[in-house]
Length: 315
Image (tube, one colour):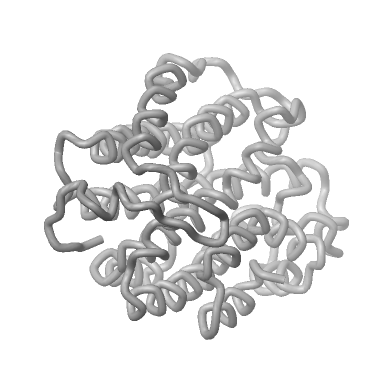
């Protein structure tokens, strides 16, 4: 996120409007988020009981959200194998979350590099970075607690992210932020109240949902502002980069190595996931709130919209 050095000047006090209506003052938004952070932030190391044993017969992820759910292969699996797959997929998603949050922290640092250091907007960005540090440590600890391995993204996607971090526009960075946050947030909102799921996983997802709500608000407000004020070339590049990010994210969402770990044929499992109408509906439902928002503010246009469709996240 690079930009020329600016103060909080006329652009921040001008009346700005988009398809959703008037934009709120950037500083007022940040002050409210800082107030919420002061009241509703958690230390996972002390908030969660990491020493409690795992519970027999419980899932690590709601079965309906496991990638193979309701496929022919799923129906052949024993309950124990299904639950073991949920354990590995929870570890895969936590690994993806850590990768994504490390990217996000770097993008946020770039965003505030040229901003006034005493502004509420910068102070909230620093607060969010602190949140993401705790989340990444929490996810790593959850992986270890569950006993599954970490699942890094492919080398190709790992290096594509290096390029993204270097060339991403400011609006593109916030669009990618929402891509990573909102789909997982939708799944976690289904997970933390689900008593079929391990208590430690429910605790992790509860903390993440509460704190990510602020991150989503910050990113949405800033993306709206950027799509109104950014030059045309930057808006066009944002549409393409967010579409490509959606394609990469949908591919990386579950590491195929999880299928091998539970004794399944990887190629057959991947093929059944791709053919699964249930899985397609889960992913599109998780993305719907985001894609509706991006459509309204003008991100889902042209080539970018076609890329979003090819990702399977946009119906």
